[in-house]
Each structure stands twice: as structure tokens, then as C-alpha cells.
Image (cartoon, rainbow, N blue to C red; front, side):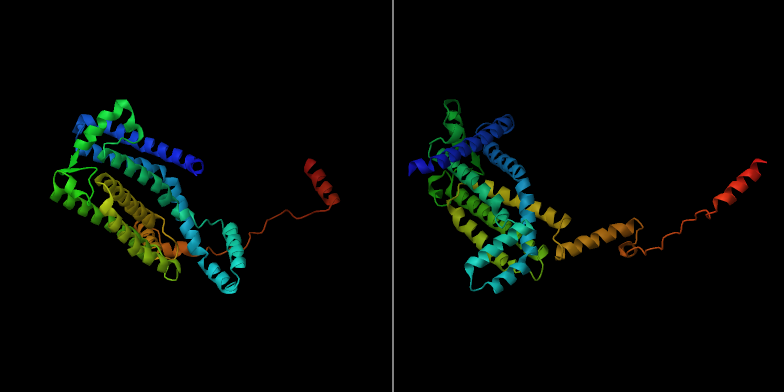
Length: 320
């Protein structure tokens, strides 16, 4: 069994090395400003980790947007297939796969950013847990980096260690500060998740889209998962997830505003803004939208054809 999972364990260990290397790199850059044992050095290093990861995931985010739009566009066809092959699951599956191939839709593309972040999230969790237990993970285990473990353990954010959790608040220097900070971060993390999902439903979903009902369920499920699971997350992980949620919220806001899905309230608002800009430039959007009337082709004026004898006679007369 260990042989089967050996490649996955190796990949996960490399992720721990990558996460710890990014943290240490940012920490080295911030140390001259805040100090080696400052909680702000380590907190901003975690935020730097988020920025690096989210920039790397931008191409996948673009694919996610296209996948969601394609799924919304083919929902009527999927409904028809489900009605047609309601009693034949095998045929339904074949026709669905055929539809996905023909339309270039991948239903799993919308989950890629979250799925790819999950291993990084757990790698960060392991690295921070190693700091809490004084058991270095990743490149923190290198002899030259062992001193960073002590510095990280001494780092405090508003009087709270970055490895502290809500359920282990009694093991921290200030129990009340730990409880207050973790609860605030859990609320912020859950709220940003809710707002991000809500603006997607309200502004960028068509009224007749069957997927809206599923999105409404996730609107409340994800914040609850974060709220319940957050009690066991270290402060550093809460900072990571709160920052990545904030990034997602503003990134999605920009996409909804500048590249909305056709047939949605956001698309109508985008069209109104576009027409307002055109009016300010002196352009009438109503006239521009009208198709230009097709004009009849202009007849070509060709010289009248003359017999060869007449042309020669005329030419000889001119020579005289």
C-alpha cells in the first residue's frame, strides 16, 4: 500500500518544501523592516504566499469562467437529455459526454482552482503545525533554517502566536486574545466566502439558469464548512484563507463588472455603462445599433461597344 501512495507522498513533500521556501523568502525580505521574530513578518509572508499562488492560478481562473459559462449555456440541452433518457442512465451518460465534447465543455474545470489550492492549503497547515509542535516540516528542517522555527514560535500577531488555534487557545500566552482573533478571522473568512458566492448568484446568473438552485445551496454550505472547520485552523492558515477569499471576491467583482455573462443583470448593467460612455463621446448608441441600409450597387459606366470597322475609320480620321 505504501508503494502505491509513494508518488503522492513525494509530491506532497515537495509542496511542503515549496510552501516553506516561499515563506522563508518573504520572511528574509521583511526581516529588515519588522524584525525576524515579528508576527507581521510572518503574517505578511503568508499573504505573499497567497499572492504568488493566486497569480499562478490566473490561467485556471480564466478556464473556470469559461467552463461555468459553457455549463450555463448548455443547461437547456442537458435538461432535454435528462427527460429523453430518464430511464436509461447509461445512454444518458454517453449523450452527456458527447454533448461536452461537441461544445468543448469540461464540467470539472470550474473546480480546478479550489482543488489545486487544497494540497497547498494542507501543506501550509502541516508547516504551521510543525512550528507549533517544534517539529520542522519542509525546508524548515534544514539545519541552517532551524533557528527560524524558534523565531516563528516567538512571533505574535496582536499577542497571538501564528500557530495558535481556537480549540487550543488555553495553550497560548493570552487565551482571551487568541479566542478574539481566531473568532474574528473565522467570521471574516466565512463572510467573504458568502459575499463572493452571493454576488455570483445575484449579478452573474441568468434568471432561468437551473444551476442557480445548486449555487444557492453552496451559498450557505461553504461558509458553514469554513466556520466549523476554522476552529481547528492555526492563525497562519486563517490568515491564508481569509486573504485568498478576499482575492477571490475582488477578482470575481472585476470579472462580473467587465466581462459579465450574457443574459444576466450584470450584463445589462455593463451595456448601460457602455451606452453612457458612448453618449458622453457624442455617439448615439441607438443609431449605432441599427443595421446599415444596404445601398443598391452603383452601375459601372463602360464605354459603348463599337464595331471594329467604325473604330478603325475613326482612328484614321484622327491621324489625318
